[in-house]
Length: 215
Image (cartoon, rainbow, N blue to C red):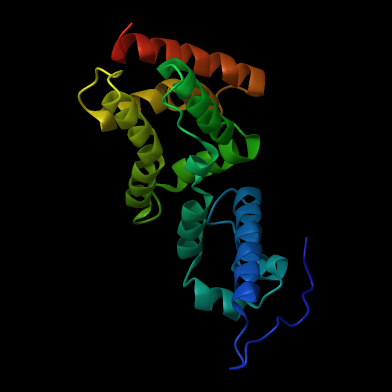
């Protein structure tokens, strides 16, 4: 779908306003994601098609992003969720309930069909795009941080028995979502419904708490 845009509002110096610039960036990200998914990755995607769908010129697109690879990596960073804002840590609740609520938020992100498609695309592009593997590692560290902080808070309250909160965070996320590789990789056509997510997360929390928390 191609959008026809009116000329963006400009600041007194003749430059687009901050709001207009942010709106354009959002349109570019949406158009890029749709194009990369539709064309099966970077090689088949067209910067011209992305620019047309976003309602900007190809020159504008290249000024912001020097190549398709740079645009793809910017999209990877933009897709990383700020799920910590959805989670409120209540240390008055039992650890199992705290972790269950956190696990559901994580699972809801990973198992959305559109997110699964993008995750699979990123994995496929990783060997072909210089710097993408390092970016994914950095984004993984950022994604784990709210879990690590949650676990540290639980441990400080005298409830956790683990030694390494980073390792424990990795284990928790793996149990909730990443360990279900057959679902993430597309080996199964199963849609992971909210009800199914609850089952997966509840099982993960039961195992995790039995290992790392006092009875």
